Amino acid sequence: MLLVSRFNTSIDEYLSSWDKLNKITRSLKPISVLKRYYHFYIIRKQLIKISKSELSRPVANSDYDLTKFKDDPEIDRLIRLWLQFDIGEMDDSLKGNYIEATEAFISRVRLKWPQMDNESIFQALRNVWIMIAIQMMCDHKIELTDAMFAYSMLYPLTDNVLDDSTLSKQEKFQFIEALGNRLNGITGNETSPQYTDVYDMVSLIESQYSREQYPLVYESLCLIHACQKESMKQQYSQLDISQISKISFEKGASSVIADGYLVLGKLDTDQFDFLTGYGIVLQLADDLQDMTSDAFVSHRTLFSFGQTRETLAENVEKLCLLSSNVLLNIPTQNIKLKSNLTLLLEKSMNFLITDAIQMHRNSFDKSYIRKISKNHFTGLTHHSRLKKIGEEMVARWV
Image 1 (cartoon, rainbow, N blue to C red):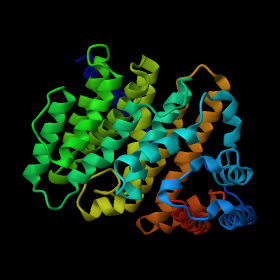
Image 2 (image 1 turned 120 degrees about the vertical axis):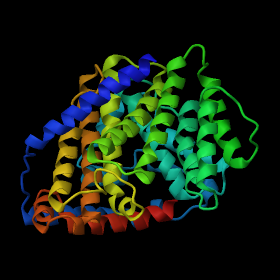
Image 3 (image 1 turned 90 degrees about the vertical axis):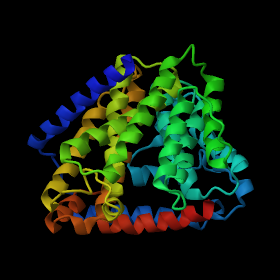
């Protein structure tokens, strides 16, 4: 298939770029202790202010309403302080409402699966946000489509099966094979809820994109399914670093490429190459976040297997450099939007990476932790304190 050939070429190029990053050093500018404490103080003050306001009062799930945050100056100020980015500057460049799209997704999930836990909803919501970002950069109206909903829900629905300790390895592989058949348009006779929920999501995608008119949509779904199957080797096989790198790159890239096809129906070369790189960066950041839990279950990633403290820090630095390089190539002709979106995604990624470093600080040399902390706008310890306050506040909203 043309899509697979194009995909393999792009993966090889990114693997080559990754190897070359070994020779590049990231330039970091230390922030004074006084400035770090000041940033911590004003963000903490803003968090406490919001937590005591009407916004923080708990609501019933059926009354969940994210739109109450839209245009709220206190929330806008918190985002501006914590992400160091004024998201309000993007509004004039956007069509539609990203908060309404988010709320529509949560409401739809709770209507269909009222017992689904918040962690699963958030897992799916992360993918919705990626698809919203694609709508932004391609100047599409921001809205929740059936395809966006269905594809995002495939993540927790399939994970629930693969993580089910009551199912044997054989049963899980049977489920994977059945899913592959369904993505290829072959329907089965399975009637258990774990199959029917997943099949329903595929049907929902088919209702928006016909297989005849949009064959690449389904090729992209089959591609990620093949990459997910291959990634199971990270759990069950002995792999070297080059094999781990290739599997991780393919898994992350294929996921976001599918996001692109399900949002746009088709991708040009620039869009395809960017989404390949962005998917790789997101996968590696996710692997960094999960490095301890992955190591515990012998799941091999670039951050959980075969790394010294020195090489672990090197991979983090390479991830930061790769992220910066990828975000330079956001495919949009809108110069202002590109600038704002690049900055927003860069700040968000840096936040995610820094948070992971702090979570796993005992895995790094103390000198590296001190270096990162001195270059973080609040410092790592204060970052943890702010995160804890924020998590407690969000817990009352959801």
